[in-house]
Image 1 (tube, rainbow, N blue to C red):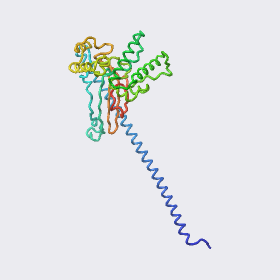
Image 2 (cartoon, rainbow, N blue to C red; image 1 turned 90 degrees about the vertical axis):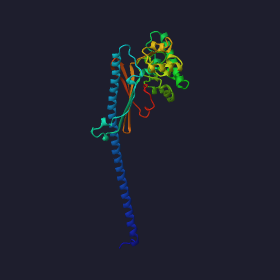
Image 3 (tube, rainbow, N blue to C red; image 1 turned 60 degrees about the horizontal axis):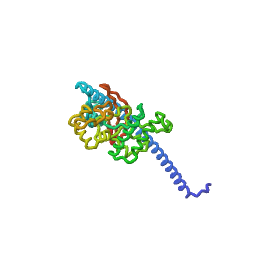
Image 4 (tube, helix red, strand yellow; image 1 turned 180 degrees about the horizontal axis):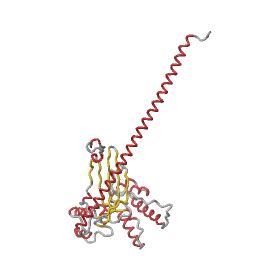
Length: 345
């Protein structure tokens, strides 16, 4: 005979039912967690695949845009050859007209008859004369055979940068940081002076990398419209495309005179440096060592907006006669590219 009190049996059954309910809730929670994880992983895989597809599409479209820019520059060179005489590059030529944002949805549609099913794609871009900026590579004089000539050129480059810094409103000491950093980098490359390759700073290839020398981001942005760091291109400034601030700093003339130069070239681009001095009513204002009226290097920027993704690239192109080659290509940060100018980074 059982001695267990009959009134305790319902309590035991209720306890068993509570344990079963708790176990069921734990199992349901576990299954829901696993299902949520699987859904998240699937969503992430879809997003990664979509991003990769957009990247590949953007890369191919921008590659086509760069080829298009090469064609424009080549046709401009052919037009100059047909005209005869000295070739010039100015802002009134077709290459200087930027491409406004154009819809490519029909082009990218799988079914050409149903363009509405294609992704929203918009392409824009521009070609900018690389010689319209002052090249900071002028601070690194390594090929002068005469030491006195080298020191003279270095002093001239420093003075130009100081004038640009004053016009741009950079903070005191920023020019010294750039000059000292660039020259230490050059000394490290050559293994000259007291700087050795092991402790020398790296030579920057873009303006953003001037931060290695301690230059603030604010000062870099102030200098960006006026300077560049394009390696391998001539050091002269194109008088037909440079801004009045760059002309003023390089020629060491006041802004009013530089603005007059800009107004004169708008009416009629300069055919030579002598022509520019003559129209200005002066003599030998623009040195052939610092200025020219043509260029050989161009920045080409392309921007593709594919649905909610933006892909942007910049290429440096070299043109000799009718041969146009791509020197370098750089993928730009979509978050920073909107405020940047094509000046080598």
